Length: 126
Image 1: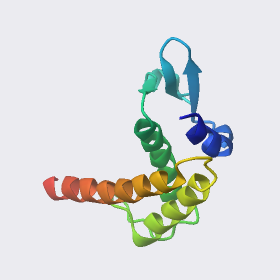
Image 2 (image 1 turned 45 degrees about the vertical axis):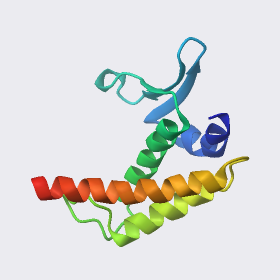
Image 3 (image 1 turned 30 degrees about the vertical axis):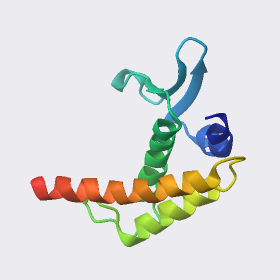
Image 4 (image 1 turned 90 degrees about the vertical axis):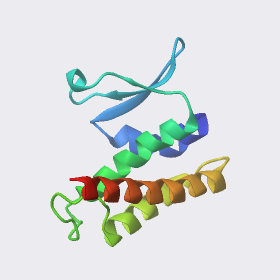
């Protein structure tokens, strides 16, 4: 998990909305710092949970980017541009990882497929 944090270090440090901190008592915690009263800390006790939190943050950044001309209001699935841009940004970070970049890239592929599938199913149920 330390290698994941090292790869994402510049991204995390550039954010003013959240942080990931380490506690000797409980481990890694995802903490909302912009408005701490809105959410308590989330325990990141596996590499998958840590990657999930970080992937979600970057995807949200891409969706809300001023460069994003493809966003459809109220859409829950990613547009082609949003998925490609998210993949590009995340791949660039994951390739900096000292170990497991291949495994992390495979996780990214599954994550994006699951993300699209999950939100497509949510759209159908609304």
